[in-house]
Image (cartoon, rainbow, N blue to C red):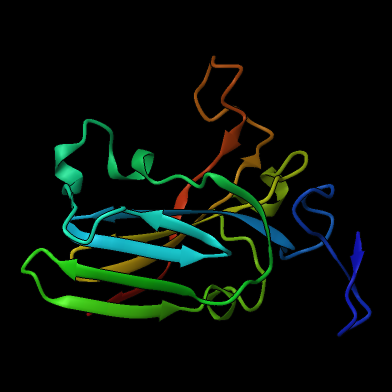
Length: 176
């Protein structure tokens, strides 16, 4: 358990025994950024540059990939402390219009609550750090969370490796 300075109350965080306190909180996160249907898309977050190397590089649309949208979105930069400065995003939409935005991940997740679709009494075990994923898709920026949540029951009957949920949940969106 983690004792918060603000309230003095104990609260569960990712990595502790899962559902003893509610809601589940996180103290660090993994981060990923993806660009689709953009030109020269560049995202800077937590000291890392995500996106393309050249201003005229075109990122293909989601439909050009074999995997589903949900499977394409992942977080490869692990254990980011909550929260670095806002993500800086520069890109051109597919019609060539330039855009710039700052996306304040800390503001979006200011309550540090883990977003998931698992009932409290179905959680079994410990959670890792959740993934926060920023997606630029043409003129829209989406921010998602994906948390690995162990479950008491198998999600695919008969598959002993399916005792978890890791749903991709939209937390914030804005169209420019």
